[in-house]
Amino acid sequence: MRVYLPATLSVLAELHKTGRLTPAPLTAYAVTPALREWYTEGDSEELEYAALTDAARASLRLLSATPEAPRRRVVVAAEVPDAHAAPVLDGPEPGLVRVTAEVPLSWVASLHVDDPAVLDEVALAVVLLGAADAGDEDASFTVDGIDDHELLWYATQELPDLLG
Image 1: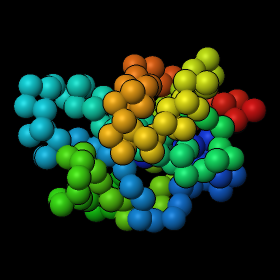
Image 2: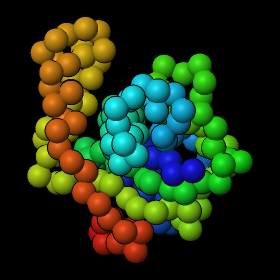
Image 3: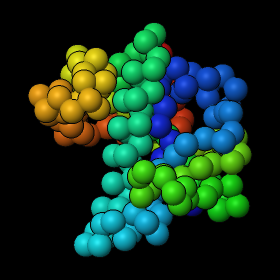
Image 4: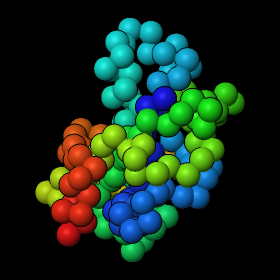
């Protein structure tokens, strides 16, 4: 199953150092039956993009919880054996998946990271996330607007350069 794991640049540095994403279980997003039902009109590419976008939003939440992390959303796309990935059936998000194994670098298909040019916008979205969650419409507008910025695609062999 292709899963999208929310991360930070610090998590990528650890992936580069250890060769794996830990600890299990990990929260991820994927094209689940519930996501397919949610997006009745979407083709497979649109569904994959929806799962990636959900993971990018979760990465924003990780940044909020990690003040020292550089303000760039990160998503790790990985091919996880079905035995190690299960949809969260009672979760609040239709694409939510629990990965029950550590994810070795060999399972990683690609890395998706914000362009450094949007660093200030991501940082502002992180600051406003709590207010957006509390119902502040202006904060929600800013936080939702960060989804308009496409994440850049990187191959796994580019990991050292991405971190450098």
